[in-house]
Image 1 (tube, rainbow, N blue to C red):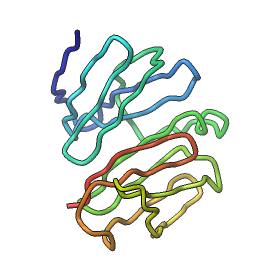
Image 2 (tube, rainbow, N blue to C red):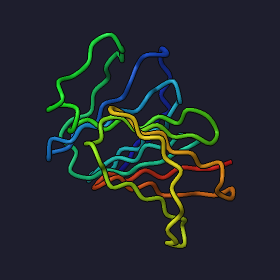
Image 3 (spheres, rainbow, N blue to C red):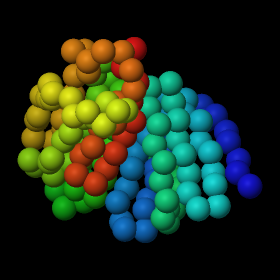
Length: 147
């Protein structure tokens, strides 16, 4: 049995997904994702991305603020994916020199257009044809739509 729901919230609310491994994923609820719960995991889908997770330890809500930063040791365990506009993705919480790859649905590796800062990476999809792509960052994967 599964249950799907669309989530609406205040601008700063996030859905936190904590894995048994200790990894923590953050989804901004302002994007109104649809969350589907399965016996062995969850699927989170918005208009611009989708993600599926198994081995989930805990799911909870948190108000997201930018006035306090986490210590560097904790940042590596928290990966935040934000779709900034129709063609730019920001990924926070990756370790420095993270291995980032973008793949088309047919498995073809795409060229990277990355602006890497010390605490986040911005990835431009503007040069890609319209379609669905998988962004792989070390062991984290996100599916995005370039419209």
